[in-house]
Length: 134
Image (cartoon, rainbow, N blue to C red; front, side, top):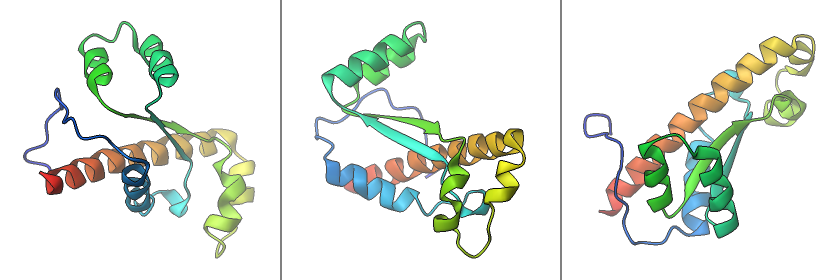
């Protein structure tokens, strides 16, 4: 998983289904984050309109644009800085919500860190699932 990990420049012709993407998320959501909370927002871009918007946002990024253009689907990873609104449901054992409400900068740093981790988990899981299909 790590020793053969390189940036992909070519993609298979196999379509990526909604079931494939749901399956990835079902695995990724178990990755460790701060307090097991989920501030990540993953948007899978496949539609022509979505791809046009994504390409406009990526202009000027050099070679990455061509890699994204060639991919059948692209995952964008973002964060919800008010992720703690879901804390009582996601981690009912401990009420984290007041701690995050009291310190917006702290909440934003946790949202960024945990979302970044989840994005990394997504790449690892996708790579591992794809390797098993070869």
